[in-house]
View 1 (tube, rainbow, N blue to C red):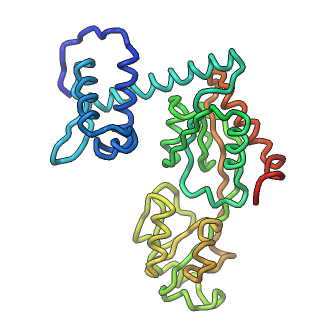
View 2: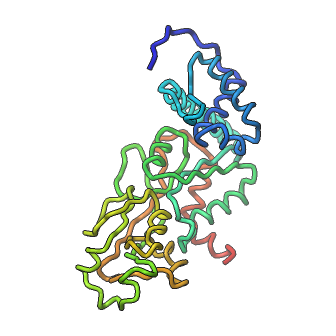
View 3: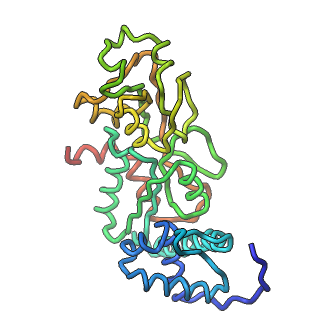
Length: 308
């Protein structure tokens, strides 16, 4: 990173905050083109905003051109600082709303992928309850990997996350939400697909090409010749008929019912995983989050009058 003479920064203004929000969106979208839709402004306007922000900060934040968009080292540090600043501003708004006893502001949630098909839709019911109670609250959901969710909750970018309860991280409080069962599946066209489950041997299963998720530790001895970053990637490879792999039963059901997947030796190849809602320990009071957690913990009562 190029060392530049330090210069005093002007006080942060509303214009700076607006430009930092544009910068955040550009980074999260991966470039100017993708950010056009999110920001609802032209690429030329985004470019002008970014140039203005770079001038105000005295930094080169990103490179853009034929090679595509990428952050500079300075840009990466500025992005992290901007995220802390914007999270602090939202926390301030939430605290002031708490003083007034009003449910206004934002609720930023990070969720692990493909939980929407869980039979007990606790998060869905709680979001419905929050909307009824506080229609002015803006809800922002991000579908991102568990480690990013935990970092987001710790640094204040997220108010709450839903992640696998694999380990207790210092600084986070966990609240149990779901227990998810997974089985080993193969797809139609796989050599083991038409075989009765009781005739398939463990040796045959463990010799088959398997796909493993990169975010999880393997629990069974399989011939992992492919990986996928998420469950959708695992499903894609299973559906080729060339791989076996683990999927949550609630997620795989859509293909099982259509005869496109089947489980193998379910008594031998199954595991369960608990999911927790995590929040930051010792976080400043936030009335929106408190009400959401109250609804989330009382999900059974809410579900009674929810539509099927």
